[in-house]
Length: 326
Ligand code: ATP
Ligand code: BTN
Image (tube, rainbow, N blue to C red; front, side, top):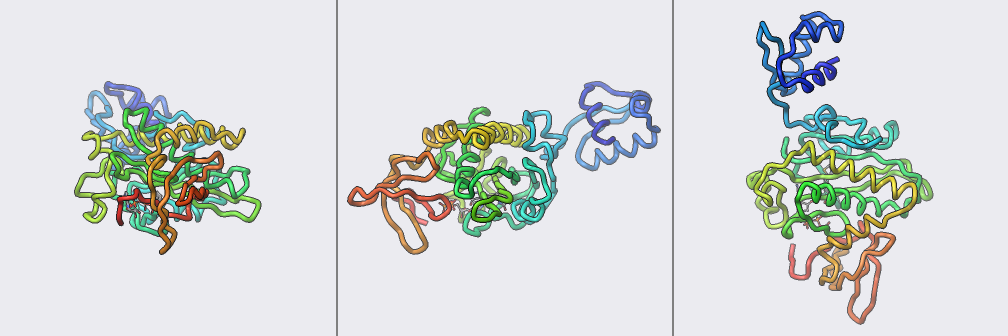
């Protein structure tokens, strides 16, 4: 009922009388008042004037389904959203619930108190400033193909940002960068057996409206936000929905036709690594090579000394530009 009242308010720029709402939804004025107050507590600014009724003045900057849906164009991704004001990590929570959830379920939190990046690293996730979300996927594919999904996620984020006029580069396999600084990371995890997947969770973290002060000193030369790089506040709701829209289209091609053409095209054309000298870091083993291609199976082809060419599987290495020290 709360969301019906909200829809009604959203559909009218002018005041709507309590009488009209009460007639439409067969409820008492007191009950309407109760829902209006709940909405106000959630951050909706609703004006009420005794002789006129109610008017929605402004919407909260929240990533709830209510707020995202007007931008959402999907069949199943993001149609079931678990929204949190605060959580330790959306990936962690997703693992707890994934078996019982439908494919396409999304967990979104305004902040994470223990967000995680690759290799168990901490992921800074301040409140209301980013998009910290996890998508639950259940494709019927071989576990070996799962790393392709990280590329698919990166392509979706790249495309969504491109649509909003923001040019980014992709650092295979899981980072999105602007001017060499990381603004998004993707952490794909799975539960499965040798030949079967139970579920995949794709965690996407985007530094949207973080200010300089939100980025810890030690990350400042590596990480940035969309707001810092473009100088503008970005609409988090629109961006969240755009990413889910692009993700669903690319995911359907992948799942139903095993088609990764567009994903590979986006990842290759916007790669920050291809053609460049790279450091391949495997624990203490550091090797210099040149990134030459992203293969059809999503692996990175690297040419080492002596023209020795190897495939690198995502997840097993860290990559740095040649001159980049940690
Ligand atoms: P690789 O996976 O190849 O080792 P990386 O993804 O860790 O690289 P870097 O550019 O080397 O990326 O470093 C960024 C570091 O900052 C990582 O350790 C990452 O976990 C950490 N970090 C924490 N929070 C954020 C954030 N919100 N945005 C960007 N980086 C963050
Ligand atoms: C990386 O680049 O290391 C991956 C970062 C992934 C961060 C996202 S934010 C939402 C989801 N929940 C987490 O704890 N991590 C991912």
